[in-house]
Structure formats: structure tokens, C-alpha cells
Image 1 (tube, rainbow, N blue to C red):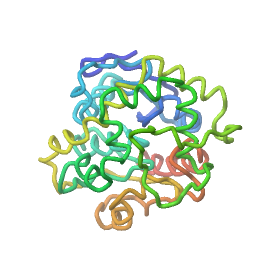
Image 2: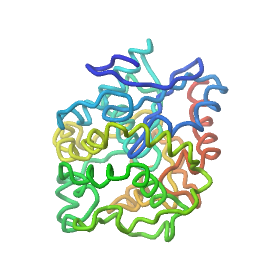
Image 3: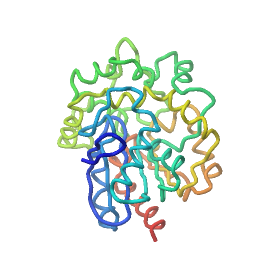
Length: 316
């Protein structure tokens, strides 16, 4: 447990050497990086993965506004310094990716290199994102479902283990119809999980023990995690000073070709132009065939290889 930015964060840690901070997404925990610890530590890196604020054994502030992107970046910067370092490599997946990208954007002095999995670098749009999706999809986009206090919480906590099983499987490359260019829309009357496939047998990348560990991490519920979504419009307001700014740190972007996130409105076009938009992107965006949303869990060997190439080049 580490005191950081006015809260306590639970971390997992392994290895010695240059610091690499791994940031998980939703609905995950530090455990989503279980396949990265050994290879990165063996390659001479100090690997640290926190349960981010609102998750697992870390603090869960009650105030919704305590989950803004500035708080989340502050947690990363504070964690790096609390661990006795001035700079670190920062790697994020899903929601952890925007935190990693914004840490590099707002504090380039702290970030030696940044990698994002699934979610590409941030380029601030012309209007608040919750508003944008509400207008485009008549309030049925999952962000808008999540922004309603208590609604998703009630659905997910009715059977936490089943909810997590369905959420992970339905967004994976193994789910029926994975990779179709459909948006994640929710029937507000029926909820998110009503039509989510529920596997009789878990896919090979997810064991019953993994699911147990993840379920245990949600013993305090989902409110903290969902509060991240409830700050999307506020984040848009808070980041106005960085309109048009570009991540300057050495960067890597990896995603699966069956991941729905890179198919969000406007995202395919963004990914296509990233090499021109980001002069320090070290390679073209890496696409993992057959991979869904849970990049480092579904394709650990390929992700580890890409991360090691990226980190080792920058370290050496």
C-alpha cells in the first residue's frame, strides 16, 4: 500500500531496474497484467501495477469529481515519485491508456516512454464526449448507460462473478461475432448484460482462478470504477488548455482487430493518421489478428514482445 496524491493505492511489484508502471482498465484490476510481470522483470525492469483509484484494495473516494483525468494523472505522477523515481515508462490498457497518454501529455518530464493498448492517444474533440454519444446514439451508448448513478451498479452487483464473466467474454476476440463494426449500445430497459453471451467454458486466456481474483477485487462494488465514465465531459472541460497538443514522448500503440474500441466513431480515421500526427510514434500501430479488447491477456506473447522491444530500445 502506497500513500499517493492524498489516497492509498494498492500495488503489485516485481523486478529491479527502470520503472515501468502498468495501468489497467475497466472492469479489471492490477491482475490483468499478470502475464507481463515475469518477462519485463527478467529483462531488467522494475514493474509496478496499481489498483487504480476506485478499484480493488485501493481507496474509493466518494466524491464523483475525485475521478477526473487530472486526479488520475496525479496518481501516476505521485506513484512514480513515491517509489523513489523521477521518471518512468507508463503503459496503459483500456481506461488505463487515456491515463497513460495524458500523463505523457501533461507531464512529459516524468514519462520516458508511453504505450497504449486498445485506446489510441487522445485528440480532444469539438464537444463533450457524453453529449456527443448521447446525440449520436439517442442515449443508448454504454457510456451514457454508465453515467446514470446506481443503474449499472445494481445490474453488475446482482451477480458480480457472472457480470464480469459476461463482460470479459463479450468483448473478447472469442465471442460470437467478434470484430463486427457494431457499437456497444445498451437497451436502457433491459441493461448491458441482457444480450451478452455467457460462455459455458471460459476462453483459454481466462481461468476460473483469474475470474475468482477479479471478482474478489470488486467486493466493494463498481461505483468507483464507473465514476471514471461520469467524468468524461468534465475531463473534456479540464483539458481545454491542451487542445491541439500532441504526445511528444516516444510512443507505442497496440490493438486487436476484433476490438470494438478502435471502431468507435472517428477512431479508425484517427488510427490511420497517427504516424503523421505523432512524430515520436516508434512504429506504425501494431494490429493483433484475432484479438479482442483484452489485449495483454488475450495475446500476452505478442504484447510482451512489442513492449520489450519498445522499452529496451529506450532504456539502451
